[in-house]
Length: 334
Image (cartoon, rainbow, N blue to C red; front, side, top):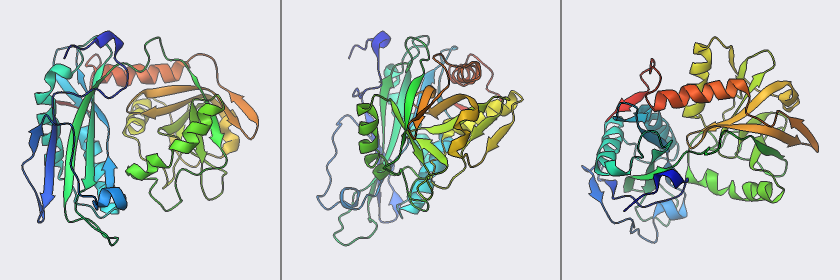
């Protein structure tokens, strides 16, 4: 397949293969690479009926020195197992998680975009309950699948800020529910708020806490962080928020830069105290926010990406592409 590297988006493109491990009788098998991009499941599979489905997202990069490296896969392994423990599904040992990533990327190495194109290989680990159950109970069989997709740079014409709408009529997750883990159902529940947001002319929804609707939680598929007017990096602290590996990395980089980092509850009234606001996640790293509409009032942050967000973005992507020192040893060489 000939790929137009210059025009890659963030869309599904079938690669050469994926890798699949099966858990049965208390153990994982040795995994099989497959070129068949379809799966067959029993009609009573627990992933279909009872939501035993979890996934992760991370990226591999062809670096300046020509080598291919993956960004912080051990963090994704730990987060997936946190999810699996919560839904009583079979955990994937870190060594299998890393082995799966190594094997599937090696088999699809020609799909890793060349250095200089701004592209990367998106890696999607997927875990599903594949055993049959009619009564509500955990499966006795699981599939752990890792697929890969070549993707282009999110910003082809520079980092352009987007508009966000605070969602008043929907909650992202219950206070003691599944907001802190990466189950598939969380994203199904986000589709309607996202649709409403776009219908109203905004790009990303912003959720408040479900209990009081007084505190900032996170954007639809990204963590929230803000840079205060006195230069602090502030991000919400809540059990209902998915712990973003990108946000964790940005906090460490901000600290390296000498910034004060605060992870704490953020009252909605504080939105006006930020000089810059960003949404952060694997797909984009940082999305600058132009304005947030809350309770009929717009809080404006600027038509251009702010200087701190730009500096943080350049540092993360510089590490990912091997252009800047990886002093935290985040990049796993393949």
